[in-house]
Length: 139
Image (cartoon, rainbow, N blue to C red; front, side, top):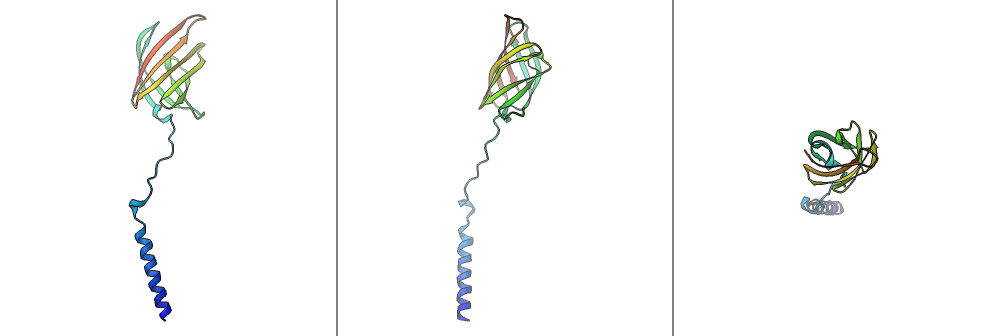
């Protein structure tokens, strides 16, 4: 009987020590997994652009993901009805040279804050002529 009482007391003391050692303040801080760098570009944007050939214009565009891990799609640049793809690296984007509606398009931009992208791109409209466009995209 004496051994049962000693075992019960030892178990109770061990249990009390175990419970008091679990202080929520001692839990490590859980940091979220790396987020997709493309997420900050997603959404509907208002575009204010200045074309060397056509002057200023405003319109809306949409930025969505691509099935490629580092690509995004930018819809309606330069009034095209097709999406241009862009490569995201941190807060910058690069529009590799691509043919959209018979015109060569390329450029780059930077996400200057959560609500603004500054973009410069070029559209080859003829064999030797490029239109230079600067644009500010705002959420």
